[in-house]
Image (cartoon, rainbow, N blue to C red; front, side, top):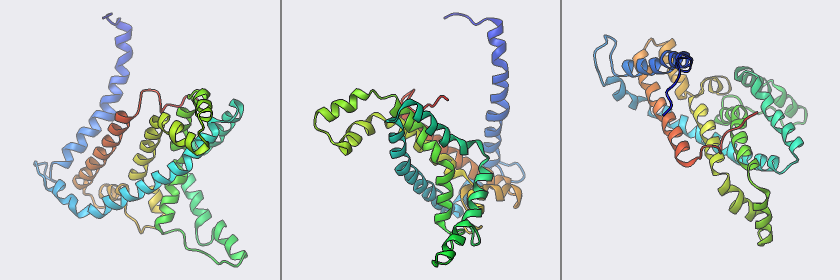
Length: 274
């Protein structure tokens, strides 16, 4: 193997420092506090106490799964349609899809809250047509809607990238063999875009299960997700050891999701270069 020059080794130093300070060190701190008590003594009490938060873990996973499935059901047809358009039109759709991502998630969520609130734009419109105001904020549907609204592009873009790389001859061959539109979709497009689907599922599920601002605003404080619980333990309850234990479980869930993506995805299926 060719030896690296001094300049090449020196160029690696900032990256190594970044990894140590902002990735490795925080992870080690989380593990340390998760397995120690307030006095710094080794203890499994924080891990054992996680059974008290079983409902929170369950509802967080459930909300994240529902949001991921909804994003997939909406995102795949959209990505498939985009991939069949002219290249110039595809670029326009990709730009429109990415525009909301240039705005902070906090602003997007607060804007959605202003639309869905009791005195918001949607309820004002419903009142004018005689349906009356509908309570949306503070319901599970509002939280899931917020997740879908904020994370839908993360589902569409990887799938679109996988589909746009497919040779049109695959679809033409399927049509020549007698496949209709639905058969072409399920027997050709879906199997060949598996890596993009896996990437999209991972990219939606991970932020959905760890979010806290969406549940706080759109949930009206009625739903505690994992992110909300971690924030409360660190900022309000002064229980950093418990918060670290919950964070450790969160890290494990994320690592499992990434492992699944690496297991079923390929090296170039879920990337998007703009």
